[in-house]
Image (cartoon, rainbow, N blue to C red; front, side, top):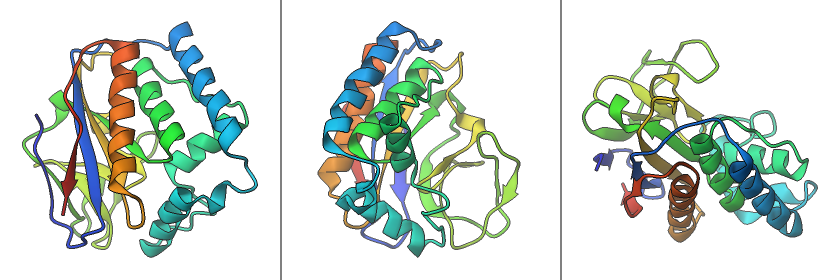
Length: 221
C-alpha cells in the first residue's frame, strides 16, 4: 500500500485513498459505455444544468476554488465539469480505468485522481508547493507553482495540484498495471461522501479492468 501523509495545516483538507492491483488497461468498449449510460440515466433524474451550481457538494468545491485563487466560473471543479458533460450526453471516453474513475466522480461529485503506482517514488505527501516547483499537467506545458498551491507529491515530483489537475508523469497508460485512487475532500464535504467516491472508483475499475482491490481509507491532516 502506498503511504500518504498530509502536512497542510488545515483540518478540513483530507483524502480517501485505495488501490487496484493487476488491472488491464484497454480502450473502452461496450461494457464501459453501458456503465456510463447507467450512471448518466441516474444523474439526469437527480440534477439539471441550471441548478447544479447550488448543490451543496458542488458549492463546497466551488467555494474552495475561490479560497485557493481559482475562479470556478472559468475553470470548474473536475467532478462538476464531468457531470455537466454527462448531462449534455457528451461522454469523455479515454480508457477503461480512467473512465471508471470519471464515472465515479460524475456520480458522487467528488474529484478523483488516478495514478500509476509503479511510477510513484517513495511516500506521498499532500503539502504546499515549493516556490518555483515544476508541474507537468496532462495535456499541458510545464509550469512553475507558487507556495500557496496545495500539491500531492512523491519524493521527486508533483503528481497533482489539489484538487483539480493531474500530472502526465504518473497518469494511467496502456502499460499501467497498478492503480492508486485518491478522492479529494474539502471543507463542508462529508468524509463519508469522499470515502464512497473512492469505493465506487475502486469497484468500477475492478468491474471494467479486473485486478484486486484494497479497501479505501481516509487520510486526515
